[in-house]
Length: 118
Image 1: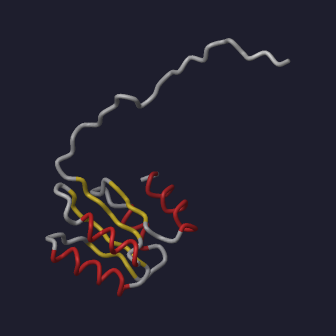
Image 2: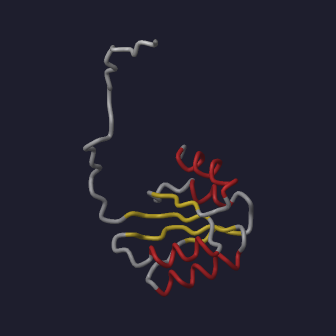
Image 3: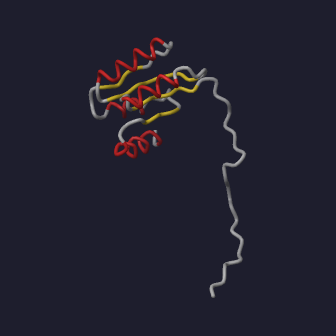
């Protein structure tokens, strides 16, 4: 019969109870504007305190279509499109608080790691 370890593990830190300071405006950059991405942008555009700072898609027509949706909702984001690394240019901006990734799954890791390293 196996004996269970009885030693207590000390937890040094956890995020329970942590609250970041309130942000009046959350500035978002959005990568991936296909069917799912453009619909999420439309829904998010109605949230008070959310500002679309950048939009990115490899396909210019998808980026422009989403830009029109957001323009009508009072958002005027910069558009990054036409090249495979345009998303990096958007991530390199210092005035974006959140990068939302709605690309095909195989692209998520490199984009998320890059965005978090900025």
